Image (cartoon, rainbow over all chains, first blue to last red; front, side, top):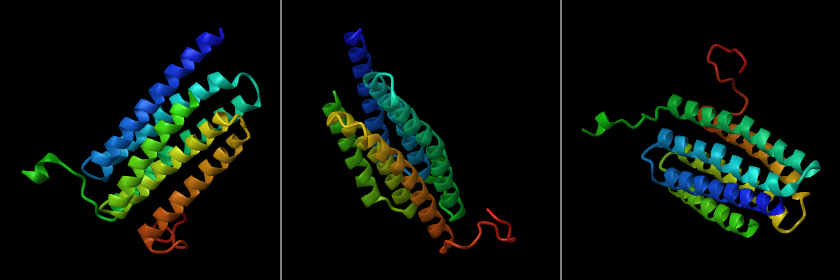
Length: 104
Length: 94
């Protein structure tokens, strides 16, 4: 049982790290703010979610589990609102979204 | 397990910080700092498990909320040049 939990949390943590690192590479390499926001959103949902799931499997039942779930809930509330606010501010200040047509 | 998680989160924080330094517009920087803050929340939580002191999760909770408020405040400041003014021109609240 303990071995199964360890294996599951290894899988969750390594998967979360994969999504997180791929997402930040996307943040580094995408061409403009709006496409970068897409990559950043992926680190916040899959990366943080899988990492916290891996920690939940190690925590066992108790207050620690409740706190982990609370951290996840707060991240899920705040991350879309911040993304929306950044996009809205960038559009309102006149950043032009990147399209293929602009280059040709 | 948690040592691996810490190392991976640190690498990812480094990448986000690079974008925050490079970012051509101020919105790139704000977005990168937001990503960096989310990673910091996870880093605090993982460090709590690594050092077997799960009380660190309370700090992670507080940091998540502070990060959100700070991000919204910085965005409002750069959009309006002022923290007190309303977003709408016709005087409605936001």
